[in-house]
Length: 457
Image 1 (cartoon, rainbow, N blue to C red):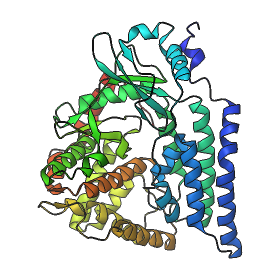
Image 2 (image 1 turned 30 degrees about the horizontal axis):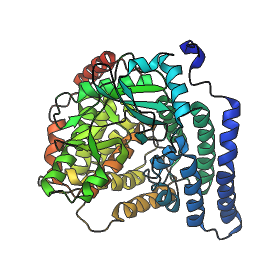
Image 3 (image 1 turned 45 degrees about the vertical axis):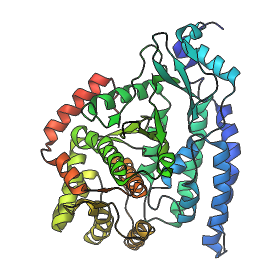
């Protein structure tokens, strides 16, 4: 097959046929569940939401792809979905059926040309790992470097667009039943970030960005994208050896090792945020490993969010407002984030969630991220906040809030699973001690330019 110009083979196009196929396979489940929920609301009919959620999980788990990925995301965002749906969808794992060898050979030829095999000493056609948007193959370059080649599944742009249509429908139906959280900007944020993840060249640039931001963190390892081996649908990077977190925990590692992993993860997420205004928005267990030196490997850089300096300043201001019980400063912090129409009553309700998230950072001592034995404590707080917002007319979270909240919740659950005992207060204070919005903006601009990361909304 002759090499095709890059412009002619971008994604193979987000075809209408591909979207229709995808929507046909998902709309029955989404529409059926929506109809049952609407019937329950309008006519007082009883509906087994847990059973419907199980059905939806089975369907999405079979389809894989971005709708599954978004479902995982939404399962950690309070009030984005009913609790029954969140519990079921949280179990979904990015483990799609692998592409066959024949397809892999065709895709590699379309990305690197007819002589693609000559560019590898070894290329394993069977996938070493699978994810929601692509699968990973192991290879060896002629210079002996071990590499991971992430190859995108076929027709993913069509899949993404069809799934986003279904997601928008599902969120709209739920909003008509429950308006505590007005989700318009949540959807826009998820849609833009998911479309960005289709572009592996962009992910390669974001990987270079993380290499730069975490260069001074010896316990955090970031792969290097390989120049000349990356396209829009193929991302080739150095191979990092490591062990999945759950498998590592199964060996019952000592407390010191658990603490080291937790501290490395804390710095991997929050050094970029407080020094550069950048956050990794997907703390999914499959996106990092425990490295041989006891640190962590970061593996996926598709879901990255860049914040303006004033947003990061607002994160710190809200922490200090909660600490000092300063309602005026808290109100200003929410405004800096982009919240509007925050009355005093709504402020008190939002601060319940803020106090829950910031509580481990308030005490200057080593402790667990959550000291209560109640595993449903976070859910109970979320339900209290939800009831209060519903009573007071609801809020519309700004787009920039979505991945920030997702990361805080997701990382907190990982720290809880690790049983880490650290002085979270000291680690946080170390990051914000010399915070300055102008310096952050300057560092951010320089790092983005050097890595070649495009600026977005």
